[in-house]
Image (cartoon, rainbow, N blue to C red; front, side):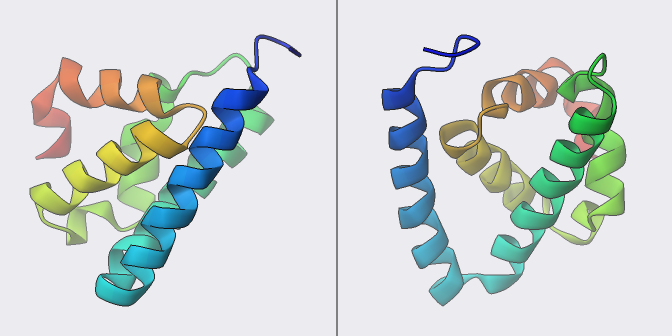
Length: 104
């Protein structure tokens, strides 16, 4: 284990992502594109600002990634998928559940 990373958990998250990606590519490509943009933007910000947390950047990244063009249900689905598949997914889920007005 390196820096608290459980390799089994990483493999499970990767496997979950492969399933979600295949499904979304076929049935909801715009949501797949949004998830990739949003997670990518947050990853970049976290890498460039190691003292920042998902809770600090999720809202801005949501806006910049086109999240407000989606329905609340689609954003919730994106959060659920990222919670299952992304290393920072649990933090994103906490951000979303702490203040539901952030997604309005």
